[in-house]
Length: 396
Picture 1: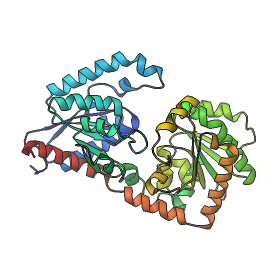
Picture 2: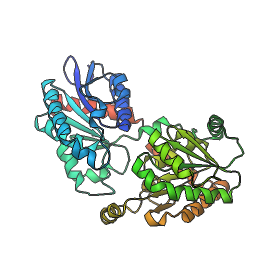
Picture 3: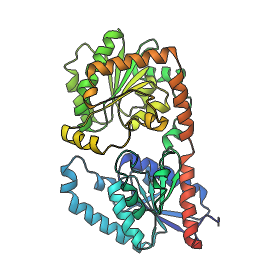
């Protein structure tokens, strides 16, 4: 038995991911823990297909936690409370050695706090955006988790004055995407898969993965794409759609742009980003993916009027795009809310395309940030959890 493992025949791990992104994170962590542990591991909890394939014994389907918009959480509240209570009972009866909440903050924080009160060690994987919003959330994390696994290097400092042990483990996406993943051979291959030729100017347009986001972003984004096409005759706009409902919304909006050359497909954004020369991206994880592929980009975001009025009063960071937050400077253009007009977005896209053609400053900065995040996140996170278990056994 390793010194970083508890003394027992089997390590029982409770784990819960409430979304597809968390399912992938959870599966990577599970596999890394299995490879590092000399003792058998048993995983019980909630996850999706990736975690089930990694050996999870499911206590409930992932869909049981699926909520959208404002009404769903209210309508499903009794069901969610019942599930929460059942999970607490089951984890306690199973005498789990540790519980890992993967993102899905509100539900997992409540579950972690309840289990911690019962003497169970708890881990939270992915820090909430305390750097952007309420710093008081650090206290809630500290009440819920013994160990916090952070994706970004600047996050542990926000927890320095709390009791939680916060560790930077890196970002799995930076491990997954090779440093040469956006190079010319990959670009050509992605274009061939999309039916595009090498000499075309390609704009990747990513208006969001949620219906509400697309509804807010699609008009200025398509307007910008049309103006960009006027400046770049023969160019093509590639739009990935993660779900049929997204594709239907985009297709309806495209009726107002009959002359815009568009390649539309169902699937994730990776292929479009690899294929493109420049990207127009809704703020979020896609900006990180574009950065890791070393693609010039323009970032935008829109909220409903009331939500925006609230957000601008509590936002604590000067930037919203992850490349800018990581670099601590305006590495890529951000045009938010009313500033994100079709004209302004198209102008910024043209400037980024020209800059990318004549210089490599941003490419070098993107690569440096990529290397900073490329830490072997799954393995580092697994080692941290196993050390926590060792400390539990030794009482240190």
